[in-house]
Image 1 (cartoon, one colour):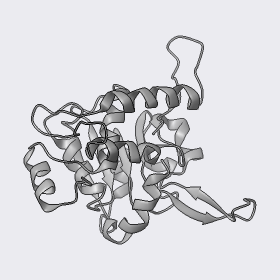
Image 2 (tube, rainbow, N blue to C red):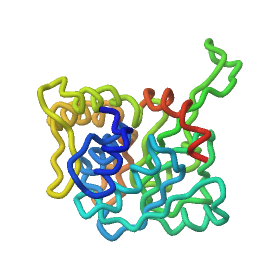
Image 3 (tube, rainbow, N blue to C red):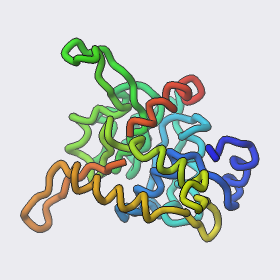
Length: 232
């Protein structure tokens, strides 16, 4: 049910119903729930792991909604990542390098999905470390229309998506032509709760930009630890 089996991976590529990796599945649900337009948009996926990067690029480019994006899959041998990101409307960072995506790589109004989570030494913390994402959140967030924080972003609902795909609620998550995502209602209800609880700022004046944090991620860190070598 993790979507890693060659049969599921092959079906995903062909657009046939299949189990989808939990993290990409969750990101697609986020884009759908927040009505983020993906059709015709430029998307950059940074990281080419089989856990996140590759399936994410397939889902975003699929003939579906959300989907129909023009996707560039970046990796450690991509020479012009900054230029690719600057022309991208959507950026999915999943390479396991803290703070890799900086403000000068992001265009105004972009959507940032931060999948990375890494322990960084921090003497000011009781634990001795802080959790950092692949995006420099403090510098990048003022430029974004949507951004996921770390922790508290993508991975927080990872277990819910695995449960949905494993049939824990009697339904199966799938993706294909005429895409069907089983068990979405329960996840969406929780996303709605988190969105209200974690809203960073709402402008009172009509027409001004509303800064919001997408709520769905600590669980991604465990996957990121295992994916780094293959992602780069």
